[in-house]
Length: 293
Image (cartoon, rainbow, N blue to C red; front, side, top):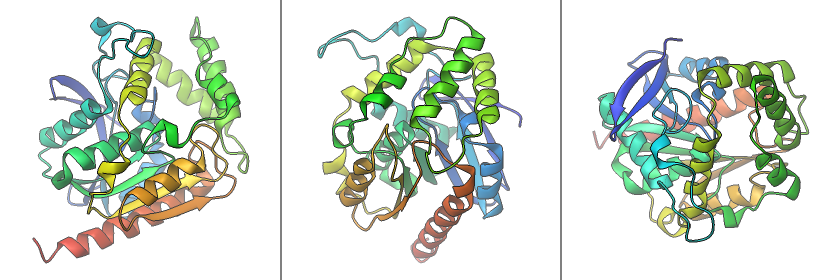
C-alpha cells in the first residue's frame, strides 16, 4: 500500500486506505507504540470486502506521523510533565477525518486505540457513526495487567534492530493468545518493518504517559448514544476481560463479545468473526441513521 500524508491537528499524519471510497468509512486506531501496519492488510481487506472504506493511520509519536521529540521523555512521579493526553490523540483522529473530507465515520480501536476511539466519541459525538472498542478499557484501573504482562511491557528498550525484533516476539509470547498458535514469522516481519519505519521508545513512553494521566472515561461513556460493540479476549493479560466488561457496562446498549483463548492480539483465526461483528454494527448503524439523513 502507498502511505499518504496529511496535516491534522497541527501535526502530520501518515495513513493509507483500503476499499472503495463509496463504502462505509471505517477509521482504525492502533494501540500503544504500535504502527498502523499492525492492522494486517489481509484483515483490512476483509473489512473492505464487507462494504467499508477502511482508513488506518499512525498515531502521533509512532511510525511516519509526527514524533514530538521536542517534548522529551515524560516526567517521573505523579506530578511529572505529561506532553499530551488521549484527548489530544482523539483530536488528531478528528483532524484526520477533516483532512479526508469525512463529516463522520465508523471508528474501531484496539487497546490504547480503543481508548482513543472512546475519547473521540465523547469529544466529537457527531463524528462517530459507530464505536468498536477492542481489548480496551475506560481506565487502566478497571483492568490492571498481570505482573508478567507489565514486566514484558516495561522491559528496557532494545539497543539495535535484531534485539528489537527479539524483544517484540518475546513480548507477544507473554501477552498473545494462548488458545491460538502465534505466527512468529509474521510478528518478526512486522517488528522489522516497524523498526525500519521508525523506532522511538521515547514516543511510546509519551503515549503511555497519556494513558496513565487521562481520566476515567466511564462517566462520560454513559452519556453516549452511538451504537457500540466491545470485543475482548477472555485470556488477555495486558488488559484483562474486566476492561471490556467495564466498557460495555458504561456505554448504553453496547454489545459485548468475548473470545476464549484470545489474549492481547488479533488472532488470524478470529478475523472473520471480528469482521462479521463490525459489519453487523456498521450496517445496522447506517440503517438506523438513514431516516435522519
